[in-house]
Length: 380
Image 1 (cartoon, rainbow, N blue to C red):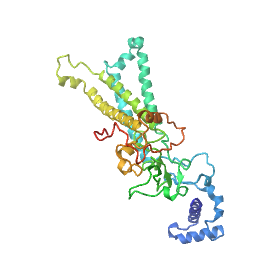
Image 2: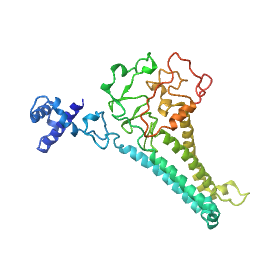
Image 3: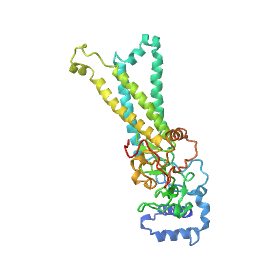
Image 4: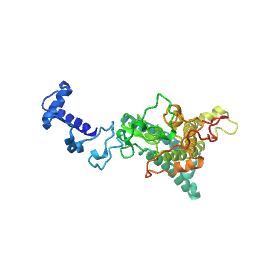
Protein backbone atom coordinates (compact mmCIF):
# COMPACT_ATOMS: atom_id res chain seq x y z
CA UNK A 1 0.00 0.00 0.00
CA UNK A 2 0.98 3.62 -0.34
CA UNK A 3 1.01 4.14 3.40
CA UNK A 4 3.23 1.11 3.82
CA UNK A 5 5.57 2.48 1.19
CA UNK A 6 5.72 5.78 3.05
CA UNK A 7 6.65 3.94 6.21
CA UNK A 8 9.42 2.13 4.35
CA UNK A 9 10.75 5.47 3.17
CA UNK A 10 10.76 6.83 6.74
CA UNK A 11 12.57 3.75 7.98
CA UNK A 12 15.14 4.20 5.23
CA UNK A 13 15.64 7.83 6.26
CA UNK A 14 16.02 6.71 9.89
CA UNK A 15 18.69 4.18 8.90
CA UNK A 16 20.56 6.95 7.09
CA UNK A 17 20.45 8.96 10.31
CA UNK A 18 21.79 5.98 12.25
CA UNK A 19 24.62 5.57 9.77
CA UNK A 20 25.45 9.21 10.35
CA UNK A 21 25.88 8.37 14.05
CA UNK A 22 28.21 5.45 13.39
CA UNK A 23 25.77 2.55 12.95
CA UNK A 24 26.38 -0.01 10.20
CA UNK A 25 23.16 -0.57 8.15
CA UNK A 26 24.20 -4.03 6.95
CA UNK A 27 24.46 -5.24 10.56
CA UNK A 28 20.87 -4.30 11.42
CA UNK A 29 18.18 -6.91 10.93
CA UNK A 30 14.72 -6.08 9.63
CA UNK A 31 13.19 -6.67 13.08
CA UNK A 32 15.74 -4.32 14.68
CA UNK A 33 14.88 -1.68 12.11
CA UNK A 34 11.18 -2.03 12.86
CA UNK A 35 11.81 -1.83 16.61
CA UNK A 36 13.93 1.29 16.25
CA UNK A 37 11.30 2.86 14.03
CA UNK A 38 8.54 2.08 16.55
CA UNK A 39 10.65 3.58 19.37
CA UNK A 40 11.35 6.66 17.30
CA UNK A 41 7.70 7.46 16.62
CA UNK A 42 6.50 6.22 20.04
CA UNK A 43 4.18 3.37 19.02
CA UNK A 44 4.24 -0.33 18.12
CA UNK A 45 2.60 -0.16 14.69
CA UNK A 46 4.52 2.10 12.34
CA UNK A 47 1.96 1.59 9.57
CA UNK A 48 -1.26 2.83 11.16
CA UNK A 49 -3.41 5.75 10.00
CA UNK A 50 -1.06 8.43 11.34
CA UNK A 51 1.14 7.91 8.31
CA UNK A 52 -0.95 10.33 6.28
CA UNK A 53 1.06 13.29 7.40
CA UNK A 54 4.26 11.84 5.98
CA UNK A 55 2.79 11.06 2.57
CA UNK A 56 4.02 14.33 1.16
CA UNK A 57 7.61 13.27 1.73
CA UNK A 58 7.19 10.21 -0.48
CA UNK A 59 8.98 10.28 -3.81
CA UNK A 60 9.73 7.69 -6.48
CA UNK A 61 13.06 6.33 -7.68
CA UNK A 62 13.99 7.88 -11.02
CA UNK A 63 14.46 4.68 -12.99
CA UNK A 64 12.01 2.36 -11.19
CA UNK A 65 8.64 4.16 -11.13
CA UNK A 66 5.82 2.56 -9.18
CA UNK A 67 2.12 3.23 -9.20
CA UNK A 68 1.33 5.80 -6.51
CA UNK A 69 -2.08 7.24 -5.97
CA UNK A 70 -2.11 10.95 -6.88
CA UNK A 71 -3.87 11.71 -3.58
CA UNK A 72 -0.88 10.35 -1.66
CA UNK A 73 1.53 12.79 -3.25
CA UNK A 74 1.63 16.49 -2.53
CA UNK A 75 0.28 18.19 -5.65
CA UNK A 76 3.66 18.42 -7.39
CA UNK A 77 3.91 20.80 -10.36
CA UNK A 78 6.18 18.28 -12.11
CA UNK A 79 4.69 14.81 -12.73
CA UNK A 80 6.34 11.67 -11.42
CA UNK A 81 6.13 10.20 -14.91
CA UNK A 82 7.92 9.97 -17.22
CA UNK A 83 11.19 9.21 -15.52
CA UNK A 84 14.46 10.32 -17.06
CA UNK A 85 15.59 8.07 -19.90
CA UNK A 86 18.36 5.61 -19.01
CA UNK A 87 21.88 6.46 -20.14
CA UNK A 88 21.99 3.58 -22.63
CA UNK A 89 19.00 5.04 -24.50
CA UNK A 90 20.56 8.49 -24.67
CA UNK A 91 23.89 7.07 -25.81
CA UNK A 92 22.22 5.05 -28.57
CA UNK A 93 20.39 8.16 -29.77
CA UNK A 94 23.61 10.20 -29.76
CA UNK A 95 25.35 7.50 -31.80
CA UNK A 96 22.54 7.31 -34.37
CA UNK A 97 22.32 11.08 -34.74
CA UNK A 98 26.10 11.30 -34.96
CA UNK A 99 26.18 8.81 -37.86
CA UNK A 100 23.45 10.71 -39.71
CA UNK A 101 25.18 14.07 -39.13
CA UNK A 102 28.53 12.67 -40.29
CA UNK A 103 27.02 11.34 -43.51
CA UNK A 104 25.20 14.63 -44.24
CA UNK A 105 28.41 16.57 -43.61
CA UNK A 106 30.34 14.39 -46.06
CA UNK A 107 27.58 14.77 -48.63
CA UNK A 108 27.49 18.57 -48.42
CA UNK A 109 31.31 18.72 -48.53
CA UNK A 110 31.33 16.56 -51.66
CA UNK A 111 28.77 18.78 -53.37
CA UNK A 112 30.63 21.97 -52.47
CA UNK A 113 33.97 20.56 -53.68
CA UNK A 114 32.66 19.24 -56.99
CA UNK A 115 32.56 21.78 -59.83
CA UNK A 116 29.79 19.82 -61.56
CA UNK A 117 27.30 19.60 -58.69
CA UNK A 118 23.91 21.29 -58.77
CA UNK A 119 24.63 22.91 -55.41
CA UNK A 120 27.73 24.67 -56.77
CA UNK A 121 25.74 25.76 -59.82
CA UNK A 122 23.00 27.26 -57.62
CA UNK A 123 25.59 29.13 -55.52
CA UNK A 124 27.27 30.72 -58.54
CA UNK A 125 26.44 34.28 -59.49
CA UNK A 126 24.66 33.21 -62.66
CA UNK A 127 22.80 30.52 -60.75
CA UNK A 128 21.59 32.98 -58.11
CA UNK A 129 20.41 35.38 -60.82
CA UNK A 130 18.48 32.57 -62.47
CA UNK A 131 16.63 31.60 -59.30
CA UNK A 132 19.22 29.43 -57.63
CA UNK A 133 18.54 31.06 -54.26
CA UNK A 134 15.05 29.52 -54.31
CA UNK A 135 16.56 26.04 -54.62
CA UNK A 136 19.00 26.88 -51.83
CA UNK A 137 16.11 27.84 -49.55
CA UNK A 138 14.23 24.65 -50.46
CA UNK A 139 17.41 22.64 -49.82
CA UNK A 140 17.98 24.13 -46.37
CA UNK A 141 14.28 24.18 -45.48
CA UNK A 142 13.72 20.52 -46.32
CA UNK A 143 16.77 19.48 -44.34
CA UNK A 144 15.74 21.61 -41.34
CA UNK A 145 12.20 20.22 -41.45
CA UNK A 146 13.42 16.62 -41.53
CA UNK A 147 15.81 17.25 -38.62
CA UNK A 148 13.06 18.98 -36.62
CA UNK A 149 10.74 15.99 -37.06
CA UNK A 150 13.53 13.66 -35.98
CA UNK A 151 14.06 15.63 -32.77
CA UNK A 152 10.38 16.16 -31.90
CA UNK A 153 9.51 12.48 -32.39
CA UNK A 154 11.48 11.74 -29.22
CA UNK A 155 8.84 13.43 -27.05
CA UNK A 156 6.34 11.60 -24.81
CA UNK A 157 4.99 8.67 -26.88
CA UNK A 158 2.10 8.11 -24.47
CA UNK A 159 3.55 6.83 -21.21
CA UNK A 160 1.06 5.09 -18.94
CA UNK A 161 0.72 7.17 -15.77
CA UNK A 162 -1.52 6.99 -12.67
CA UNK A 163 -3.79 9.50 -14.41
CA UNK A 164 -4.23 7.35 -17.52
CA UNK A 165 -4.00 3.84 -16.01
CA UNK A 166 -5.78 1.85 -13.30
CA UNK A 167 -4.25 0.49 -10.12
CA UNK A 168 -4.36 -3.22 -9.44
CA UNK A 169 -6.91 -2.91 -6.63
CA UNK A 170 -9.17 -0.75 -8.78
CA UNK A 171 -9.84 -3.59 -11.23
CA UNK A 172 -12.09 -6.53 -10.39
CA UNK A 173 -10.26 -9.88 -10.12
CA UNK A 174 -12.36 -11.25 -12.97
CA UNK A 175 -11.01 -8.50 -15.22
CA UNK A 176 -7.36 -9.28 -14.52
CA UNK A 177 -7.20 -13.06 -14.69
CA UNK A 178 -3.99 -14.36 -16.22
CA UNK A 179 -5.09 -16.63 -19.07
CA UNK A 180 -1.63 -17.03 -20.61
CA UNK A 181 -1.55 -20.80 -19.92
CA UNK A 182 -5.11 -21.55 -20.99
CA UNK A 183 -7.19 -20.46 -23.98
CA UNK A 184 -9.78 -17.78 -23.38
CA UNK A 185 -13.29 -18.94 -24.29
CA UNK A 186 -15.44 -16.01 -23.19
CA UNK A 187 -16.62 -12.94 -25.06
CA UNK A 188 -13.72 -11.18 -26.75
CA UNK A 189 -14.97 -7.83 -25.49
CA UNK A 190 -14.48 -9.11 -21.92
CA UNK A 191 -10.86 -10.15 -22.33
CA UNK A 192 -9.02 -9.52 -19.05
CA UNK A 193 -6.49 -6.75 -18.68
CA UNK A 194 -2.83 -7.35 -17.97
CA UNK A 195 -0.93 -6.13 -14.91
CA UNK A 196 2.51 -4.61 -15.42
CA UNK A 197 4.80 -6.20 -12.83
CA UNK A 198 7.12 -3.18 -12.88
CA UNK A 199 4.78 -0.18 -12.94
CA UNK A 200 2.04 -2.00 -10.97
CA UNK A 201 -0.59 -0.54 -13.27
CA UNK A 202 -3.25 -2.39 -15.23
CA UNK A 203 -2.35 -2.04 -18.89
CA UNK A 204 -5.14 -0.90 -21.21
CA UNK A 205 -5.50 -2.61 -24.55
CA UNK A 206 -2.37 -2.39 -26.77
CA UNK A 207 -0.12 -1.18 -23.94
CA UNK A 208 3.32 -2.69 -23.43
CA UNK A 209 6.14 -2.12 -20.97
CA UNK A 210 9.32 -0.94 -22.72
CA UNK A 211 12.39 -2.47 -21.11
CA UNK A 212 14.64 0.19 -22.63
CA UNK A 213 12.71 3.18 -21.30
CA UNK A 214 11.49 1.44 -18.13
CA UNK A 215 7.89 2.60 -18.60
CA UNK A 216 4.62 1.35 -20.08
CA UNK A 217 3.64 2.92 -23.42
CA UNK A 218 0.06 3.15 -24.68
CA UNK A 219 -0.50 1.71 -28.18
CA UNK A 220 3.13 0.61 -28.17
CA UNK A 221 4.69 0.21 -31.62
CA UNK A 222 8.44 -0.24 -31.05
CA UNK A 223 11.48 1.29 -29.41
CA UNK A 224 13.44 3.28 -32.01
CA UNK A 225 17.11 4.04 -31.38
CA UNK A 226 17.04 6.73 -34.11
CA UNK A 227 14.68 8.95 -32.12
CA UNK A 228 16.01 7.71 -28.79
CA UNK A 229 12.68 6.55 -27.41
CA UNK A 230 9.47 4.68 -28.09
CA UNK A 231 6.92 5.07 -30.85
CA UNK A 232 3.46 4.97 -29.33
CA UNK A 233 0.00 6.47 -29.26
CA UNK A 234 1.05 10.13 -29.13
CA UNK A 235 3.92 10.17 -31.64
CA UNK A 236 3.22 7.37 -34.14
CA UNK A 237 1.66 9.87 -36.54
CA UNK A 238 4.71 12.14 -36.23
CA UNK A 239 6.96 9.15 -36.79
CA UNK A 240 5.18 8.36 -40.07
CA UNK A 241 5.51 11.99 -41.14
CA UNK A 242 9.21 11.90 -40.30
CA UNK A 243 9.67 8.80 -42.48
CA UNK A 244 7.87 10.49 -45.37
CA UNK A 245 9.99 13.66 -45.04
CA UNK A 246 13.28 11.79 -44.78
CA UNK A 247 12.37 9.59 -47.75
CA UNK A 248 11.81 12.67 -49.93
CA UNK A 249 14.95 14.43 -48.63
CA UNK A 250 17.19 11.39 -49.09
CA UNK A 251 15.94 10.73 -52.62
CA UNK A 252 16.57 14.37 -53.59
CA UNK A 253 20.00 14.42 -51.96
CA UNK A 254 20.85 11.16 -53.73
CA UNK A 255 20.19 12.87 -57.07
CA UNK A 256 22.31 15.84 -55.98
CA UNK A 257 25.21 13.53 -55.18
CA UNK A 258 24.82 11.92 -58.61
CA UNK A 259 25.26 15.36 -60.19
CA UNK A 260 28.79 15.51 -58.71
CA UNK A 261 30.15 12.88 -61.13
CA UNK A 262 32.64 13.77 -63.83
CA UNK A 263 32.83 12.59 -67.44
CA UNK A 264 35.71 10.22 -66.76
CA UNK A 265 37.79 10.94 -69.86
CA UNK A 266 34.97 11.19 -72.40
CA UNK A 267 32.18 9.02 -73.69
CA UNK A 268 34.47 6.15 -74.74
CA UNK A 269 36.49 5.97 -71.51
CA UNK A 270 36.62 2.64 -69.70
CA UNK A 271 34.56 1.91 -66.61
CA UNK A 272 37.70 1.61 -64.50
CA UNK A 273 38.79 5.13 -65.45
CA UNK A 274 35.34 6.51 -64.66
CA UNK A 275 35.27 4.70 -61.30
CA UNK A 276 38.76 5.97 -60.43
CA UNK A 277 37.65 9.56 -60.96
CA UNK A 278 34.27 9.18 -59.23
CA UNK A 279 34.92 6.74 -56.39
CA UNK A 280 33.81 9.32 -53.79
CA UNK A 281 30.50 9.75 -55.60
CA UNK A 282 30.00 5.98 -55.84
CA UNK A 283 30.73 5.55 -52.13
CA UNK A 284 28.28 8.28 -51.12
CA UNK A 285 25.64 6.88 -53.48
CA UNK A 286 26.01 3.41 -51.95
CA UNK A 287 25.66 4.73 -48.38
CA UNK A 288 22.74 6.93 -49.40
CA UNK A 289 21.04 3.99 -51.11
CA UNK A 290 21.19 2.04 -47.85
CA UNK A 291 19.49 4.87 -45.96
CA UNK A 292 16.89 5.22 -48.72
CA UNK A 293 16.00 1.53 -48.73
CA UNK A 294 15.63 1.52 -44.94
CA UNK A 295 13.57 4.72 -44.78
CA UNK A 296 11.29 4.05 -47.74
CA UNK A 297 10.78 0.46 -46.57
CA UNK A 298 9.74 1.65 -43.11
CA UNK A 299 7.43 4.25 -44.68
CA UNK A 300 5.63 1.59 -46.73
CA UNK A 301 5.45 -0.80 -43.76
CA UNK A 302 4.04 1.77 -41.34
CA UNK A 303 1.54 2.92 -43.96
CA UNK A 304 0.33 -0.68 -44.08
CA UNK A 305 0.10 -0.73 -40.28
CA UNK A 306 -1.87 2.53 -40.36
CA UNK A 307 -4.61 1.30 -42.72
CA UNK A 308 -4.94 -2.04 -40.87
CA UNK A 309 -4.92 -0.56 -37.33
CA UNK A 310 -1.90 -2.57 -36.23
CA UNK A 311 1.41 -1.81 -34.57
CA UNK A 312 4.83 -3.30 -35.23
CA UNK A 313 4.71 -5.16 -31.92
CA UNK A 314 1.26 -6.61 -32.67
CA UNK A 315 2.16 -7.58 -36.22
CA UNK A 316 5.41 -9.34 -35.32
CA UNK A 317 4.31 -10.92 -32.01
CA UNK A 318 0.65 -11.60 -32.75
CA UNK A 319 0.72 -15.21 -31.50
CA UNK A 320 2.37 -14.17 -28.23
CA UNK A 321 0.04 -11.32 -27.23
CA UNK A 322 -2.76 -12.32 -24.87
CA UNK A 323 -5.51 -10.18 -26.35
CA UNK A 324 -4.72 -11.14 -29.98
CA UNK A 325 -4.36 -14.92 -29.71
CA UNK A 326 -8.14 -15.63 -29.66
CA UNK A 327 -8.61 -13.88 -33.02
CA UNK A 328 -8.26 -15.61 -36.42
CA UNK A 329 -5.16 -14.70 -38.38
CA UNK A 330 -7.13 -12.86 -41.06
CA UNK A 331 -8.98 -10.62 -38.59
CA UNK A 332 -7.54 -7.25 -37.55
CA UNK A 333 -9.24 -6.71 -34.17
CA UNK A 334 -9.12 -2.90 -34.17
CA UNK A 335 -9.60 -2.18 -37.88
CA UNK A 336 -12.44 0.09 -39.03
CA UNK A 337 -11.58 -0.25 -42.71
CA UNK A 338 -8.63 1.28 -44.52
CA UNK A 339 -9.98 4.84 -44.86
CA UNK A 340 -11.51 5.12 -41.39
CA UNK A 341 -8.45 3.56 -39.76
CA UNK A 342 -6.20 6.03 -41.58
CA UNK A 343 -8.41 8.96 -40.57
CA UNK A 344 -8.37 7.88 -36.92
CA UNK A 345 -4.58 7.49 -37.06
CA UNK A 346 -3.87 10.84 -38.73
CA UNK A 347 -6.24 12.90 -36.59
CA UNK A 348 -4.85 11.70 -33.26
CA UNK A 349 -3.03 14.50 -31.42
CA UNK A 350 -1.08 14.93 -28.20
CA UNK A 351 -4.03 16.75 -26.61
CA UNK A 352 -6.46 13.92 -27.34
CA UNK A 353 -7.81 11.78 -24.52
CA UNK A 354 -6.24 8.32 -24.13
CA UNK A 355 -7.58 6.02 -26.81
CA UNK A 356 -10.10 3.49 -25.52
CA UNK A 357 -9.57 0.59 -27.91
CA UNK A 358 -12.53 -1.70 -28.57
CA UNK A 359 -12.59 -4.83 -30.68
CA UNK A 360 -14.45 -4.53 -33.98
CA UNK A 361 -15.14 -8.26 -34.34
CA UNK A 362 -16.77 -10.83 -32.05
CA UNK A 363 -16.95 -14.59 -32.10
CA UNK A 364 -19.84 -15.88 -34.18
CA UNK A 365 -19.75 -12.95 -36.60
CA UNK A 366 -18.79 -13.59 -40.25
CA UNK A 367 -15.11 -13.03 -40.96
CA UNK A 368 -14.81 -10.04 -43.30
CA UNK A 369 -12.73 -10.32 -46.46
CA UNK A 370 -9.21 -9.11 -45.87
CA UNK A 371 -7.29 -7.93 -48.91
CA UNK A 372 -4.01 -8.18 -46.98
CA UNK A 373 -4.49 -11.56 -45.28
CA UNK A 374 -6.79 -14.25 -46.71
CA UNK A 375 -6.80 -17.92 -47.71
CA UNK A 376 -5.23 -17.13 -51.12
CA UNK A 377 -2.32 -14.89 -50.17
CA UNK A 378 -0.63 -13.05 -47.32
CA UNK A 379 1.20 -9.82 -48.02
CA UNK A 380 3.05 -9.42 -44.72
